[in-house]
Length: 100
Image 1 (cartoon, one colour):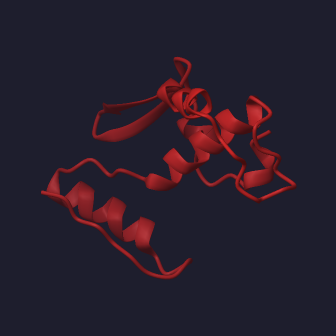
Image 2 (cartoon, helix red, strand yellow):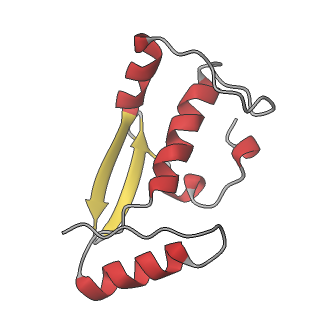
């Protein structure tokens, strides 16, 4: 079963999703963590500048860098690893420009 929640920023989607997942015994997949992990990889590789939010032209090799992201469910919580380093806490609720 997959449950998706949509709504405007600041409407409580993440809080609802976390509570609902806990109540149902599901794992909460926070897609924001995945977006921030992707941004971090591209920032670290110099493919994206935090000050320039235009989308870069990426090659297949650039996109293959996303294979450095690994997800693991530990004790009902999703953990995000980039190059074997747990970045979950760092990627939670950080401003985009602080990822570099």
